Image 1 (cartoon, rainbow, N blue to C red):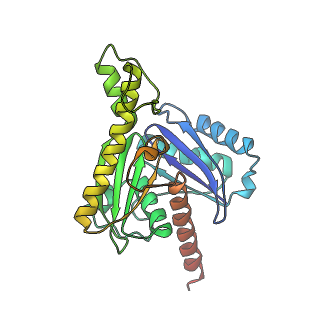
Image 2 (spheres, rainbow, N blue to C red; image 1 turned 60 degrees about the horizontal axis):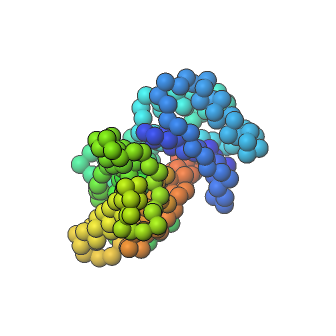
Length: 264
């Protein structure tokens, strides 16, 4: 079993996973002012809730898009597990062939998503991750990462709408009873849900046109389950995709390290 942690701009996803089972996934708020000790307490609390002993955890891997927190989280985990922690970044072997202008700029979360998708679904692939931003990754029929898109996340769009329009109060992200809203709240909910779903449908359609073929479409991220059910395109929801990718990379790294130790 490994501890997998993904540090995003809004949430930190924590999970324990092995090749056979995902034991839990939980979310913490990303707080840039928290100390190493505070994050260590958070992690220990989660492990205690699920009755997981630190001796059961063989290793830990972290992916992060928040550099200010990365090392703090790494030290927090090491304080709890008393084990070395792997941080996903340039130089870590992932098995993914990235055909970008600067492969090192690709976010660790997108790398993990792509690794999991390429190991679990047929190519070509379109991988959608719906978090603070919505990212779209494209893998060709050879499972090479050829590029993608970044667009404002659902939450950001809603925040922008409510902050700029004084008469529109804050609302939750859930679908209204009707597509055509009957009041201001319903209109806002319908607008944010169905415009996001239609946007994804249109993006998938255009990417498939450029690829010249249909693709397998997989979605993940904290907001995916709110939007994907309203898409017309066939999109598979895989909420643990990123954790699966981190597990694959961690096992690959562990295997390589073991091979190196046997070399003379």
